[in-house]
Image 1: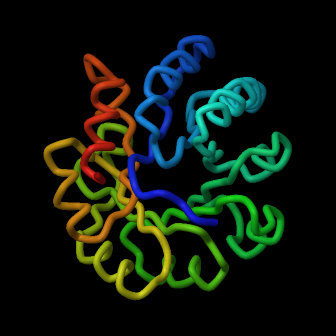
Image 2: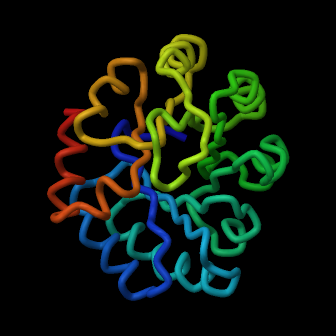
Length: 205
């Protein structure tokens, strides 16, 4: 799976499905590389409703929709891929279930062996973080930029950075080797999310 470099938009925890869809629609003109549906506060029924609403919206914009932490839901909906955290199952099994045409990413936190295992299992990208203090995961371990550089040199895979990313600190992450910047708050909590998303896209021009 060939992915563009760029902004990797991650959805906020939003219980109002109409508001969530509207927020995503507003930023899709910036052509993010990926959108990840993530809602840590929703139950399974709401997650299914929200992901089902987002999928055609993202598809119409030509942006793949990735389901966070729920491979069964990604398979059920025929989403464009799944992202697995530490406790979300074996990447090799997920790769087999998704097939070669859909995207699989893994969280590696600050742990290089997780990236090695993910690459061996056939994932499409590896993600490191938190790169900076994050309001979404305040207790997350910090990952150094050296991990991004090492991954860029050792794997023929896109490298995602996540955690506390802003327009101010993003260029240093791109320079270090990140080809995807996973962002929630700095886009969706901005006064003008569409303009902020476009500004991130401009960093990759």
